[in-house]
Image (cartoon, rainbow, N blue to C red; front, side, top):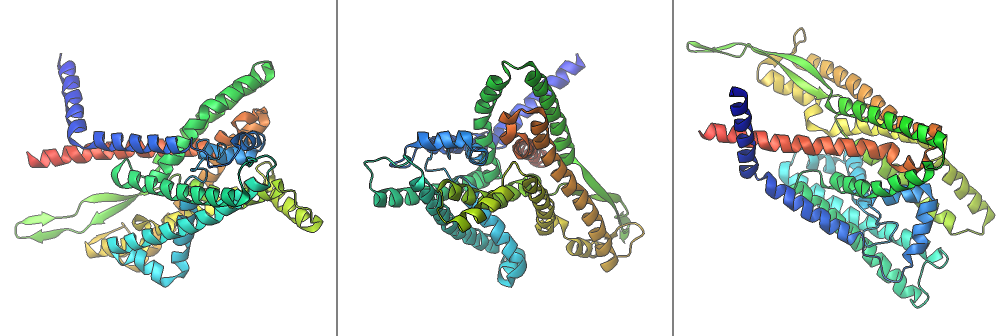
Length: 446
């Protein structure tokens, strides 16, 4: 009887928190933006025979992979064909430039909210310029593709309309992502990529069912591949939630008759501080040259020397080559370290200064520089472990698809799986944090 009453009370508390936390409004707003994003992904640019490019996407692993991340927008040659790629690439470049440009570093670290807004404005401008460049490359590739442009459309009108539409689409997607970040469930670009991947899953399942329907060996391979995927999901969750807790002891202070401090606590450091962002950054960096080279190859360049150079570069960045996986692994490790270095909660010097300021210390370590050195050592080790683990997890499903000959899951096998699980966990954590924050607020008001 008591258990039933406790269960009813828990349900009532959850319903009350749901109504009062504003979570319902954020969810509805996020769903509305997603619906708008999916609607735009179905609108083709003017003058294009998108069936020609759709057939090319089905036969080209690279284009098919990019098409999955855009939720089919690339294959349909829609106004959202570039997706969040320009925005993410611009964010990476600007964040990298903060290391070498003092003025940008000052904006990021010293000017607070005003500096963050200025940085965001710079990223927006750079997104527009990058989207303009990618739109030109993409339109040029479409123009060179036989029968891709409708015969009754003039080349000038096709180039102008396509570049303007694609650039505007990239800016609109950036805006939609920012709206989700500010008024929705959090990291907008990641959620849009998440939705794009989800939208492509039925197509991958249909292709896989067709592939294995007549071959018993492939059916066994599919079962093995699903088991590997499930095990990978478990390891992704473990990696996402794992943390290193550094013990902290605060000094005792006596004020009058009361004694403050002297309590033992800890500082939690995530094993994978960047979450899915190193994966997304690595994709943006790696696929940009691969995309350009893939489109250039479709143009059938007549110059033998240039054609040979582009062919070698295309093999280097081909998703079927060993070099691709090596570069991909190195990028994940490098970007994990980079992302950890710009997270405010993982700055050894600042943490050491704050601990010294409030009279706290790591047991057995002197305050000040020794504490900063100890924290730097700990953070370097856990970041290395997390980066290597993230890189290995990203490799396992891709290798498994090759060993089992189930190539229809090649796109969703590695990076997509990590992004799906990582973003889903992030959304759950944000919802949980929102509900807990409202519960605490209600408790304090009582």
